[in-house]
Length: 337
Image (tube, rainbow, N blue to C red):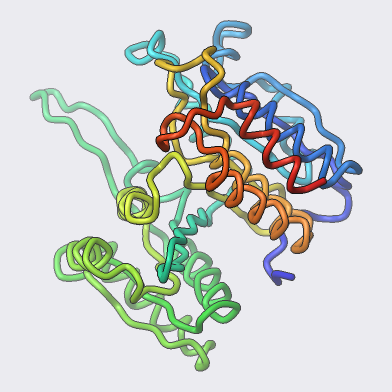
């Protein structure tokens, strides 16, 4: 069992489910069906979020939804986004950033596993360029600011070291210290925190080199820890090297409160309502929730194995098969039963 559980006892066994948009409700329905099979004692409740929430309430993260998430042991989130709101003043993605900040889920875990590759990318999620000051100057110049406080770097570095200690004992810290002041801070703090973990082998790598190494030899990595924007890019690259975004799960963890568990892929409006969406990433994210929110390692491993079996036996159209979403779910449940 992982030492990095995020749920606290007062949150009991409540899971807030955010069905999201387009294919979101379709893959969420599969996750809920599987949870009733593998963890029937969990309390599942749904709340509106994303584009569906904008239509219903005018905001992508209604107060009621946020309050429910705060009370929960975990938040299970399906993809959000809808072309209708791509250029709107209020967009689904704004709610996603707000939810991450409100729950302070600063550590985004992105596992990438395939063949001899078994790496975990740990991305700082609530700081850096995506949360810094931004604006437009009078001369038309626009700016986005990348800022980090030492405490922000320290806590994500410590999370990375803890995870590396539980895995293969190797941590790669990725930055751009030859150019950026924030990266020089990052490297200094990681070195300081590393003194507390003499059993973990740590090395620093510039982000451009890290991208090249991920593309050419991903098996060399165990745990990678990096800042928000670098992590956003590198985690997608790692997913592409190990099966694609359609199979990639994620867990976003804080310290003691509810985590957010969600697939990496988008809401796929082009196939919504056709019953052909691949729920594998949603189910793998559900397995991460069982592991990190509830400490149910056996159930998590069973679910992961069932998903792997279904991918082999009943692949969906995106993987060259002909299984519908429901047929894929049937295969998973059949293995678990």
